[in-house]
Length: 324
Ligand SMILES: NC(=O)c1ccc[n+]([C@@H]2O[C@H](COP(=O)([O-])OP(=O)(O)OC[C@H]3O[C@@H](n4cnc5c(N)ncnc54)[C@H](OP(=O)(O)O)[C@@H]3O)[C@@H](O)[C@H]2O)c1
Image 1: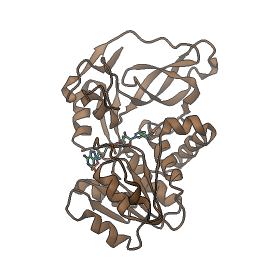
Image 2: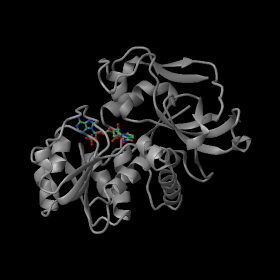
Image 3: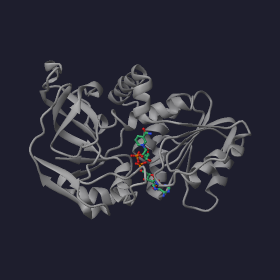
């Protein structure tokens, strides 16, 4: 089988597609034949990072995470044999391959009629969008700000915020195409954060302040999101795509502001039933078309270098899919 790896840190060109043996599922695991792989932006950060002190540093050879959609072809010891033949989706640390091994615990069941792109949203990006909005206690008629709103997680968060009762949804992105995409998704206001004075545009749209900001860019974007909060407003920090894990001075929170965090793995560990219920809920929303899963950029596994160029250039609307 073929799989993607990197044997040096660096730009997209360090990625290689190589031959390998099909892995064997261990106890509690299944083997999945891959139908599609949803790529994650964090792998750009992991691939580039050379400092062992960084949270994004990974030892070599490097693997790519993936939200794999596929069919179970074998169940390991102590694993339900009835899983064989079922269509599933799973988040994997080593997910960019024609066959992958996954823990049976967190397999999302995928209905036959769901597209691979939509199914790829279930394990991670949909769950993060849903969990982070809940961590921010979004309700009616909140004003919600979603930074990187045209991204894999962001484009789902924009739509889910509305479904949770948000009165006004404001989202940021970096290009005309992304701003148009945000409006298509139902954002009331789409703001180009690369333009000076972008925060002023958010203020104009939310004169009383923002009730909840979903923030995964980090650095200045996180600080600005806190500035934009209304009294009792909440920022949910769930990533740092710009690579700046900045600190927040406590004095910036005195005006009745809260910064909370969200991690999918922490959620699964702390509230497993809630996390599983969110996947079931997302499946229903995707099946009935109430949630649009944008995964129109599809490339073959052999073009993983080009795929990572697009991710790194921030040129993807929604999610990028690889197919074996
Ligand atoms: N907490 C968790 O459990 C969890 C799980 C999965 C992922 N994450 C995190 O969630 C974030 C989003 O993941 P994703 O896969 O959905 O990625 P994504 O939003 O599809 O891609 C990242 C986007 O961030 C924006 N960005 C990147 N660098 C930036 C910079 N220097 N300044 C401003 N904006 C920048 C870009 O959007 P624009 O071009 O529009 O600016 C870029 O397209 C990542 O930080 C990831 O690590 C967290």
